[in-house]
Image 1 (cartoon, rainbow, N blue to C red):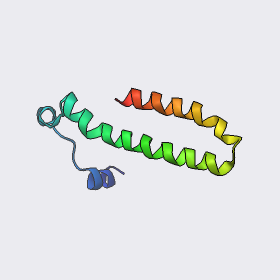
Image 2 (image 1 turned 90 degrees about the horizontal axis):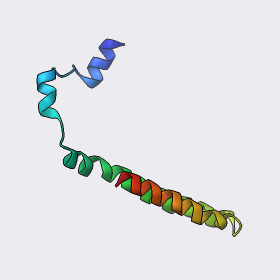
Image 3 (image 1 turned 180 degrees about the horizontal axis):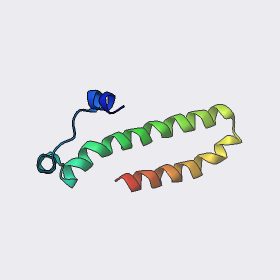
Length: 77
């Protein structure tokens, strides 16, 4: 198992080298938050599409789902 992991992931970095590989908080936010934001944006559209297809009774859930998605965006940003 260790050999397979080393083949795919590689050797661990030494502590001294790992310090130089870290991202600042600003850079990390710019790099990693875009993925979460795009996931939340596309998920919103798909959820509402399913609710429309389910019928008018299911559209009553659109406001609570919209609020939950807005909270997720607030947490990410």
